[in-house]
Length: 407
Image (cartoon, rainbow, N blue to C red; front, side, top):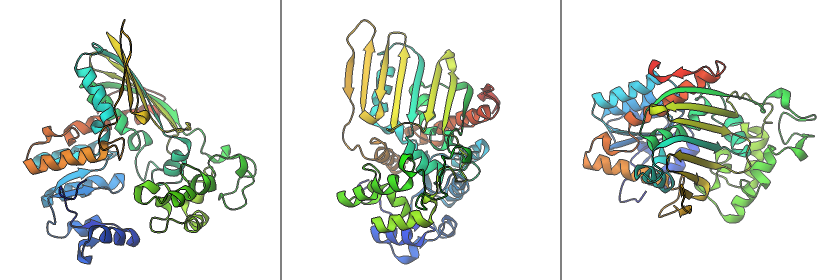
């Protein structure tokens, strides 16, 4: 975001090294750098807007307190794994007349914006069904959902919410309709102790005998892999988010020695078959929207490349899209398919969605407009969370159909 649009006036961060890095980056005095959100919220109001980017189960309490303090709020997704907590934040936003945006950045991408425009313009007639997939990738699953912060449902959220509320939200937005029923299947197939290969060590650098044939080996992912490893980070001079995922292990020392030390002692060096994870590694969700429109969505860890694909079928044509390639193909029945390359302007951060969302949020705050001006206000963002909650309830109960009217 351009510095003329906003100024960071304070930060809260429990890790001292990250807090200091933020202080230096934004030129903050030490008395504007806090060790917790609670410490920050105990101060007089410090700005117009507060960004809540903590762990999933912390969001609502902090956001509600920020609203009461007079802040408008940009809340990272998901709002909360608890539907009642989501409604609590919604109620506070209305009661105190504060703007609350949720980080559903995909609504702001040129890719999904193009698809939305085609549907709204009647290019494929009436939408009847949607088929979509989120390809998490094998190494991202290992990093975030086996070894990392989102590995346990009781500490964060079910994976269908933590990773894929983006996708569920997109279906709601594209269709402009309410979801009525949900059923879901899936589970934790691979990353369990009984699936460990013979000779596997508890840590990847502790003489693991299964190392050569293991794609989840931490040394491969964080040191030697051309896409994710620290050697590529160093060679290409990457910093900040560009150095992800290595920057998660050693945010202030992007060297091979620092990464190797982190793997020897920290959580990211654990064998993927010897972690305390419980979130799923594959899940399918079937949805029925108003007017009988059906959507089937699959999230899977077991892909070589990441990204999202979508196929929207209508009465007069269909739309196929690949977010990773920023490509949309429109086929109107009986006509030659038309291909659209949708990369335009700033494409950083979630295919161009991150900064566009922040621009829109800040503009809405500046204008003093209502939440209806936002694509991702709290009122419209709750629907995806209810779908995710229903999907997880269904999955844990043998795929039983859940009616959202009952939630």
